[in-house]
Amino acid sequence: MKAVGVFPKKRAVDLITHAPPQIHGPKQVKICTIEVGVCGTDREICSFAYGTPPKGSDYLVLGHEALGEVIEVGPETRRFKVGDLVVPSVRRPCDHATCAPCRVDRQDFCSTGDFTERGIKMTHGYMTEFFVEEEKFLTPVPQELRDVAVLVEPLTVAEKALEQVWKVQDRLPWGNNGRDKTAVVLGAGPVGILGAMALLVRGFRTLVYSRSPAPNPKSELVNSLGAKYVSSQAVPLEKFALESGPIDVVYEAVGVASVSFELLKLLGLNGVFVFTGIPPQKPAIPIEADSLMRDIVLKNQVLVGTVNADAGAFAAAIHDLGVFKQRWPDALRAVISERFPMDAYRELLVGKNTGIKNVISIA
Image (cartoon, rainbow, N blue to C red):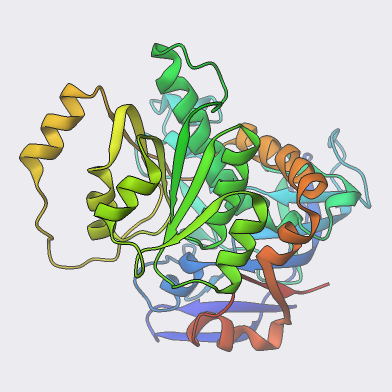
């Protein structure tokens, strides 16, 4: 079958012939891939910044954001039947008996670092025609969400981030809503826009701070949601502080350390700053560490890093996509800029990054 693979040693990305998978376990499910989202992680792997093939393979099949249809089930499968739509998760647990998170299916908090990840680390991904997966790593998708379900995995970033915010803010009389609170999303890529939607439905007054000057497709989409798009080129941070007022939550989704630590200065009393981006390796940047530390202590602030997601975040993302589709049907569909055939892989993975979210249609 066809697949898109990256060859780290040869520094090549190619459309390849990959052996079709077979069910070997009683609770495994065979899936026909419908769509695969292309994200910054895929592009970074194709720049050979990271990405590890499975043991014994010289290539890694890409893709970790997928929607598929069940075509075969193992004899002990209980949750799925042929014809069901599913979204697979990314991370798989390590084998260490001493890793408490992995032993309770919270491999997103793996304490050994020996986890594997589909399409990223030591396990082939979903940018291929078929794949086989254990049913526990799949989340069912309602048919009415078929056209947007490829967005589930990037939305899980926000779902897990908000889970962490609520847990942290249990120390305060907030409750699990953002009513009368202000959130700033840093970055207007798909993770940022989906995060803004998640914050809005929870009641936050939401601003999206991004580099590109308005108007542009991202700013128009953000403003159509009822959030406010602000360009950093037009409004520097000192002016943005006047516009935002006290900030209760910052959801960072840009992966640029210099901008993130500048915005950290604006975080308000009892605020939470959630980092989700991973900056590339660059020379160290200067930061005003003394004043930042003073604010963190005196203002009861919390900085949280979050990566990957658990089954609960996938279920929450499916639920929220349904809410988004009812509330903003056109805007939600507009997050997906364009769908491409698999043959267009090179343009999407190593060419110029365009649009918001590009998707490869396979089935």
